[in-house]
Image: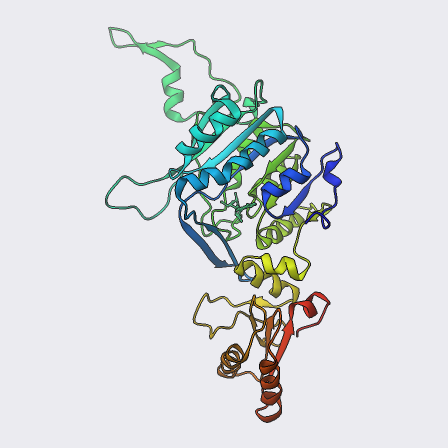
Length: 410
Ligand SMILES: C[S@@+](CC[C@H](N)C(=O)[O-])C[C@H]1O[C@@H](n2cnc3c(N)ncnc32)[C@H](O)[C@@H]1O
């Protein structure tokens, strides 16, 4: 990674940037001490789920793991060095918002945030209350996330006037009168409503991303822009640097950009960073480095399987199959001719894989397909030649190295 990264962020002038890679490694190597004004993070929630979603015109598989086989202790141990880094890079009057839910927010608050940022610097536990379908018959509906807000020492920036909300009808009525006299008539209050609106409290009823929502990117656990808007407006000023070490599809970056803040985002997933790049481009942000994207065979070997598949499809300008299963093992198609493509994150792909793929290509009604892998056995190459010669079915064996060298797959 080190060779691939330019060290532009080591300068004192922070600039917009995206990083693909493990946030611990990136923060340690590239983000200077006391350099960011506001951190928002939305780490995997310790929910023991493996998110895997296929969505959108490009039908990419967008997925990430949220599985902690070692239980809560291993989750906390995994987060701890990351929180220490976040504390190091945050300016002394900066703020951090940590987005969690009922699975682990209590552990993270007591075991990590109180320890690292100091219990005295706890500011709020914000409850993001949302609507949604599906409740267990055994308990009340679980309908909120917890956002733990700490400052990195006092004083922290808090722009209350930028986040005031409208008074409700009920509170307007209530504030007009102090009480009722014993004769029953209302006694006027001298309490003045603030002309710019109500000081919001720590329960935020905000709509989640709905299936029909315009801002929906289909990324699992995508957060609504309005949530980030309130956080960024309250705890930063124009030109400040906003940092998200688990940026997913880039909600923090998009909102920071709209609000004229600078931003730095990190995600371990190639698919996520590719999506954030596009999202920011559509907002007119084009001139920023994207650091750490996979460029070598060694990088490709480290990718998660879904990321690997998306990466290859993008490299060959193909599109992934929309189906997660039942598509005859075909992973995607070439853009021009819709020839089937199968992608194997393996060395020495042999006859059995070739046989399965060639029958899938036939069943799909095509006479040509591409099998992509790191390398192939001689048996697979001989069989591919025979198929082409004797059965008029052309299975091209394409190595990742050839793709990186620019081989076209049409
Ligand atoms: C809950 S999602 C964030 C969603 C985001 N707030 C949004 O609105 O799209 C968590 C993200 O953390 C990323 N992630 C997990 N482990 C990581 C690591 N070690 N370094 C960087 N990113 C990581 C995942 O790829 C995933 O995109």
